[in-house]
Image 1 (cartoon, rainbow, N blue to C red):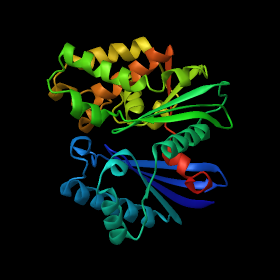
Image 2 (image 1 turned 120 degrees about the horizontal axis):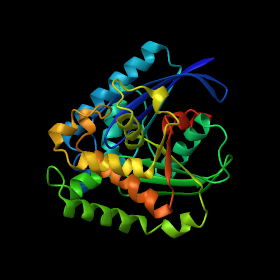
Image 3 (image 1 turned 90 degrees about the vertical axis):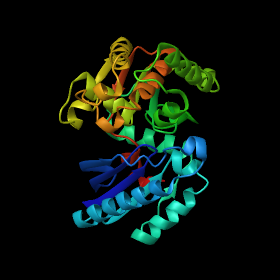
Image 4 (image 1 turned 90 degrees about the horizontal axis):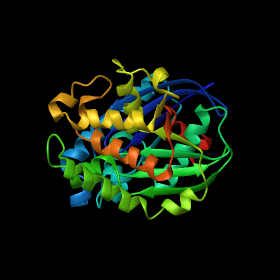
Length: 305
């Protein structure tokens, strides 16, 4: 048995997975999260702010310290949408390496999709012939269709909960016309890849990432968050729409008090759930299954490559 660790630096949050691994099987998993929001303003400024760099290096160093104290023999680290889009993304990676001695790998959207799909396969039994995985991040959304052995098509779209919140949402609570603009923006971005993915006829949708797990947590009013109750939790499209409508009527201050919704995600959850409902509607898929296994677990398959 080997102790390993994986770190994902996403647009909204940084996450750590500590795991015990026997071959390809994970016998123990523990996750930690820090809402560092490295992608704040990257969509408009194309740069990570100095504050963002400092905050994320500090959080990364703390995760490395935690992993080493736990006894991790290997530490894998990746950065996704915000870091790969930022003009100074590699400066951040170099500074983090100088601080910790651990190399962060900036991955493409296609690599991100592959890792997410591999992670899902580790945690779900009895998959259908055609499966779609949707990974809604802060800066991008990955859509992946595949079967039990391979990906048939995977795309990364520049729409995420942080990116679209900054781009579209100004009112509090969100105004109906503003939400309509949000839906139209998502539909326009989605249209680029919709027909090619629909032609593969996915029959099941699995959601990974913070938006999907938060939907499951809110629906169950989980306090504290319980990964065992979130993993493989199923919601219908109508249940998710009802949840979205409830949150849209609340000002931000009230959303911060909702059970199951982390206060630091309250400002971006409207955009995240709207991406989910728009994707489900576009593909005619009536239910969402949520997976706690995602790209962190995918990184620990064959060294994450």
